[in-house]
Amino acid sequence: MLIKQFTRLPKIFLALLIQLLVLVVIALGVMLAPYVITPPYSYSLLVLVLLQALMAAMVSCRLGLPCWWRWIQFFIPIGLYVGLLVEFNPLWALAVFAFIWLVFSNALTERVPLYLTNATTRDALKRLVKSQKNQTFLDLGCGLGGNVVFMSGQVNISESHGVETAPLPYLLSRIYTLLRGGRIYAMDMWKTDLSYYDLVYAFLSPEPMPKLWQKVKEEMRPGSVFISNSFSIPEITPIEIWELSDRRKTTLYIYRL
Image (cartoon, rainbow, N blue to C red):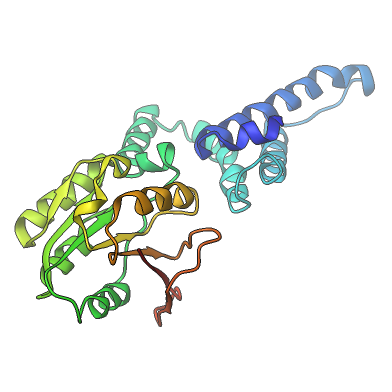
């Protein structure tokens, strides 16, 4: 039950909580060591840092983090240790954190990192709308605005919009679309009205897909199309699955309402 409650936390908070729990365990071990092992004995701070890194990496999967997070968990204490050795200016660390928040703030709230659509996928979107006229397009979490600009240039697309809430990607995509076409809104995707659009595209993560499908069913018009890049909707069969020939083997899951 406790582990299930942990998994509901944003991944970054869960990762930091795991690091804290491991630190407490190691601290207790250091305090109790004299009662188990007769002094004198010696250990270096580096040994404790490596122990922290290994333990945090090992328990991360079991406490609800995706297993690829174990590498992040391993290098967090090592990075802090190296920073202390080289007397890294904490203002630089603050600047790095601020930059990461400006770019990846959605990863903290919605568990949606910044994924960018490649040219092969955009060509697939172009083929998808080739036989339709006057289509309205929406990119949920449009990142840097590349899809919105690309689709605004298609003859079968009458309007191309995107929504984005991460501050820096929104600013860049706003400038890009002002120069090249399309329109970006600083809007939460959960507050976006999908009923206006014929084609809705999303490249998010597995986390929001079940909730997003409920929104799609409730708001999108009959005959409209929802496309998810790489992440399918659990227990829902798409009308088509397009496997693309790019290097990352992109899969598009196409759902018609």
